Image (cartoon, rainbow, N blue to C red):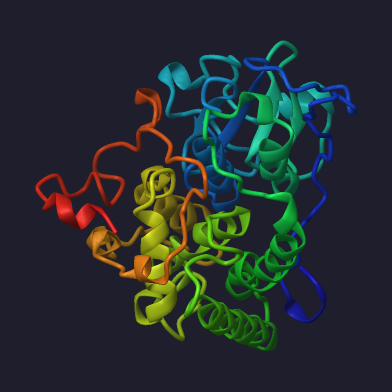
Length: 344
């Protein structure tokens, strides 16, 4: 906890990178690494989306941890026998200890593990998705979108910087504040930034340029959790997302775009926050709502123009083993819904 009761995130991550030239000792090699995620975690959700959009499923396998964890680490309780079938471990902690015995920092997702050695390579979430865009190019699907185009990187980086500070991390600063003053500072920074984002998005479909970029992925994973978790659980309650017309339409636009909404597991999201954060929610009771049906309603954002994938194409359906379980996501929750409501 920081000064004055402010929540301070531990940013000491493993900075090793997997690169095309292997400068850190870990060259890009299809089939060598395993991306470990939880669908509950917004930081891991970024990596799931980017991997989907770029078509890296065959090159980089994915392990999905359960939605809850204890003080030791995330567990593979969704898999038969409670072990990841590729890594053969019960806890992500084992991969961290394999490389760094006695590792004393956070065991976090997303993480990438080197399958031959069973050792973690990196859990640096900020760099990880950028490297998927820039270092794994040889293994992108044909016509993959440019999520981090060189001519827009400076703008993307600047938007990402303020969105992380005030929104992605801002909701946590409000939720975990240990004083009234710290909470109110975080609360106002958050909603001031959301108002700023709404102003930016009022006349343009995406955050930077006229296509989806890394910046949109990073904002989306916070917005999609806003009403289900942050509004109540983290006391970010000036407005629900559904009461912020521009941001609600923008979030629905992305949700209905292949590679975004089909990665969202509302059941895992709610179970993680409400069951794990017992200091905030001592009973561990998980709310039943909100109803996800609104995510499939028309958004009208196509009137602003833009090309979601630029010169690229949408990704295909998720691989069978990576489909969000029935009943956990908005699209799958509504089997009888008119097909027209599933599109922009």
